[in-house]
Image (cartoon, rainbow, N blue to C red; front, side, top):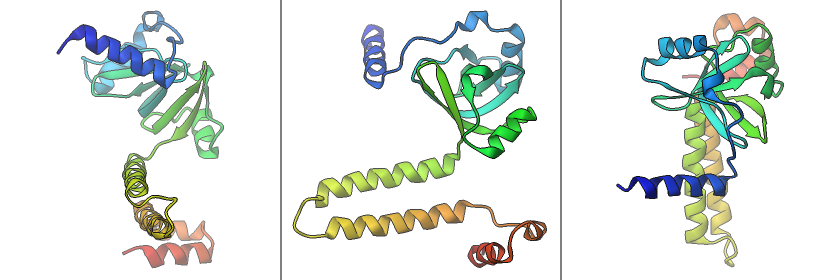
Length: 194
């Protein structure tokens, strides 16, 4: 392991991905944020500020004007709530207004210095990644532009299987939620539950 080579690889990767400068300094953050993060995820966590055009995924703690997000085993990123747009989802917007974002899995993606937050489902993301890799491998192997439609048929079948797996991930409703749901939606839910 050559530390200089590792640093140059990291800088090269950042340049390719468009990730830029830090948006604020971690040393300027309130000490209580560090204490909250350490109480929640252990004493060895390192606080960092987000970067321009960066993307961060993980659980968050809502702490006043900041969102503290765990992005790795020992890595925590502190976002300013004023920089993060939570209006992409009504439920997320409501939770933010009620200050109930703690414990939520989120993906926060920066475009320049402003960010957009979305709910993140790790299981669904894993399925999407696996099927994306299978699609790319099938496209290389079978080819899109060959005279046969074997890739197209295979891609449609893969999409059907992926959708079925995602449907299985959705939680089955409780009987009490039947009163809130329409009868048709509830019967569809019950039909797919084991």
